[in-house]
Length: 50
Image: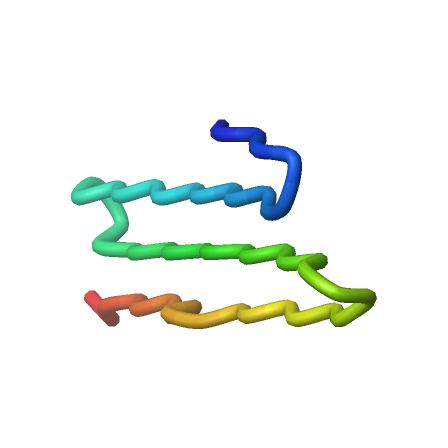
């Protein structure tokens, strides 16, 4: 978690090889001159069938 007067960045990444699931989450909050930008990327869940 990194907080600056102009932008906030939150990154979350979890990997489980037991059930072969991968979860990636990135949130970027920018407020420069009254602007708001939110980016959500890399969200994937993979499940394997026995």
